[in-house]
Length: 265
Image (cartoon, rainbow, N blue to C red; front, top):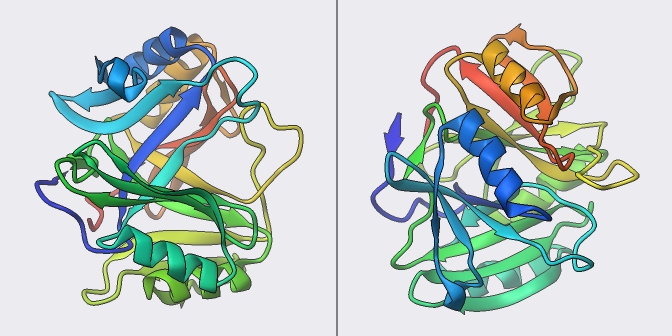
């Protein structure tokens, strides 16, 4: 369990959010599955909702107006002490700006970029809002990984942007662990040779995938199905915990995991 009280080191996953076509249905689904409650940030924030766990924000949710979005996914934001500087690093490394750096009231400064393989991610320079206040416990995110066809090129891009150390896992699986510079903490991974079909998408694409921690992976899959979602895989045991790939009622992919042990933060 980790309770976050200040901005995370650069390159650490710091926040998640999602845009959906039906906000009420999404709140019911995720509230039942992950134990979230919701706080509407008001009209000045476009009725962006904070997803809270024990009163602490862990993610964000908003309604995408009809016709403005056809594909849906959980977006991961990485901590960036200098948002504008990291945007420049991403562009210099071959990335593309999707949303230019902008202030979000007094909460922070954000940007969204796309890596050369097409996966989007956010940058978050926290001010009043450092990001997810709870991580690595049931109801919060526990892991993030990039799923992409070209893991080697992706690894070089993220190393150039965030200074990650790349640690290929032994064996036949094309998987590389990402270690945060400075302290060597694992912050995510790159799964190569594959792509994900996003919510509403017709074709697989490179994308960041999120794992949410749960108390019971099998029960979580039952809740997913009961709430109108689906399972891409049945729960299975791995060295890191019992996990399953699932989708919400809008087809958005994510993973549920009961960790084998408390992960690094």
